[in-house]
Length: 316
Image 1 (cartoon, rainbow, N blue to C red):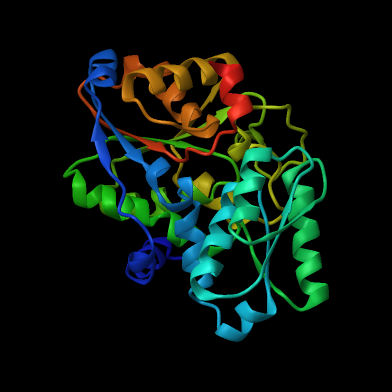
Image 2: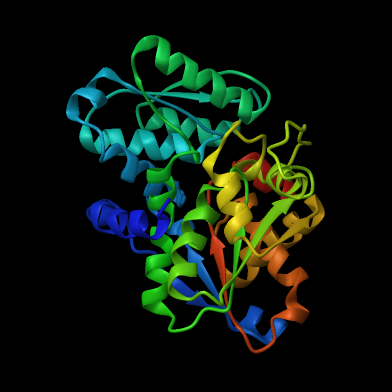
């Protein structure tokens, strides 16, 4: 599986439809870590999340007839919004299955973009399995949120931009749920700068990929509630991202709910930008490892901005 090749193809394919997001140097976090810290601001991407890259790359491989018949996906919010946004550009119908505990704010965005939303299951793995089965039964096209080479390739286009913006990258912190984002970024970066250290960052309350990698197999383990809803829940059996994480992710870091809240508040105060819980996970993990980063060029992927007003009020 040549992820770097897929990323290069995706970068050309999706270029007209996405924003090349800002890579912003942070004086505050650079002083804190004694490193050169840069934030890749995917919170400023269309739909407020990196997910547009993968969804758009996948949808561009469909025929107009496939889109017209209807597209099905499963999502905690950001991927569903990306699919709905893309079909708004191309035409077509989107059905998005979400878990019962999905963020109301994210669901509102999906519906505002014209997609049909259905609730199913208490865990994302159950939601994904149901959505895939529904698509097969109805003869519709299914777009996985992470378990797909073209989706992974689209997410990896972030790394293409990073390489063009920084001559050397030493460490990258990436929020980790199903593994699509980190697989794409790592697959491309390791082919260009093999020394780069990739750190997968998860909330302690939902670290299924980390536990699965430790066990050597994809585990079906429960997750506790977390404000990092974008990284929450289980992993689809047989997910291609599992082996990619085992191959390319150098280390993992977990953070508590209090740490997520603390660094979400701090980022708002210092950087004056809205982010969601999963983005704060990567920031908290970077700060937790600050004593290992002195003198290095560090990138933190700010993966999204889609946080509900109610959750934000609680954190503040």
